Length: 294
Image (cartoon, rainbow, N blue to C red):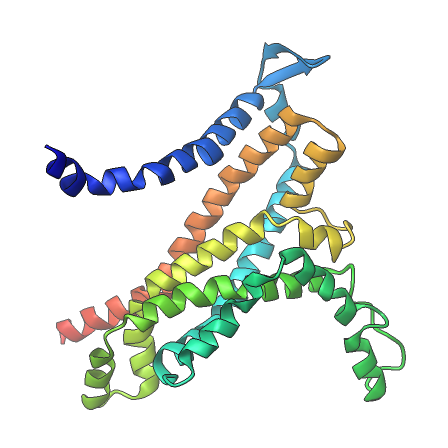
């Protein structure tokens, strides 16, 4: 009985701490937040169960904020995917001698607080920062350019902050890729470009989709970067939620807007999944079907 408990059901018992962690710090808070979105408070007491909070946040202005955040998250995810793929491909396929050192430098930013990352960009993008000084010394501009408190600064810093989250899943998948498939494709007369788009890219879809969705979700809810480098001029989902909870101090409306944003986020993820599948998997399936037809 003890053997059966620890060997056959051992996986379940090992996963108990993780399950408890998820219940206490994810499921329970979300459940409380969901219930709070239907309640009305007066003088710190619950007065009634209502849908007024959802009616209050169900406005066109709120949907513009959500769509703006979805566009920003999608753009950042696409940029990270485009720039992360060559890095992950090089680390997994080309490097052997300095692979561990390269991975060390890749994970080094995680050792530094994310807030420090954001503030360090002020020294680069400020009017008297490094970038403006370089442009002025080279004679490319006559006056310092205004980089801080712009949407461009938000996109740049989000791209810098979340790029490692895209590289690591891609590297993990590409590292496990059977290199004999690439060799077979080259031996059969395919060039490297065709081999990459028809073999490597579809087989690395799981890593690309995992990194894409991870960056998408993190970018959608980001509030530090828009608040600090955006100057609070443009509202995004993360900044509006933080205003609801920390400035307005309206827990029910903040909870209602959070769940409305979550629904839109799920729709955005579904659209991104279909788009990724269309561009990464469908061309290969189509080429295979045409080849079989011939």
